[in-house]
Image (cartoon, rainbow, N blue to C red):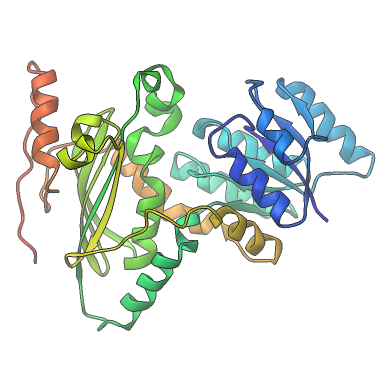
Length: 335
């Protein structure tokens, strides 16, 4: 049985980690979160020590290590901008790190973590759960069987409406969350690279706080993508039905359905890590590099295939900011 500590116990994704620790037959012994709304712990590990101050948590983990009872893994579900620091803390504590997406926010953070990991005898793992999704695995197998010269036309759409709370959250601060493209998009960019190969070109058409859109050329695909947290960007039929999320991935016009099947993906991730596999820093790097490029690129310049939802969002943003109109990207045909 392995022992775990958890940073970010009050976060949305933390229960998936607690469940994964329990379902793999291991034990959560300590947890940290500045917010004490963590009653969910009782459903999994009621005997786990809990801390609201990092200093006390740090002292506890170090004390246990000195007593010969060091935790084996530290799972990290903290806000994105703290991931780098918390992964470093895990390695200094002689524990393996299992970090939620995004592993870090910048390519040079990736470089630094690789150096630190190489100096230690512990590993840094990241959660790329879409790679574990049966639908994505099946899609990758189909694509691998296609002719090598074949290039696919892909349309990715993900809209998840957020309420007013989002505006005052760290998630609405790009320097902390990485912005929409990183915070809600990094898993999708990772799966696109995993399916279709490395990035050859990237053009950003929209780069606003609540919506990003653009075009990617991958080794085997041409991708138009659209990510939004604004309810107004939802298709009419989705809004009328009272739903707040719309997720779609089409490959050569064929919809890939992956709305369900997420319940056990973290558990599967933990199983693979505990068995000696799992995804590491090198696996996380391509999507971190791409999302950083998207976050820092000028919008509305260059070319590329424009996403079908672009125009509606373009008009909405221009209506909200008439003094600083957003330029419309030049179109390019498939080539």
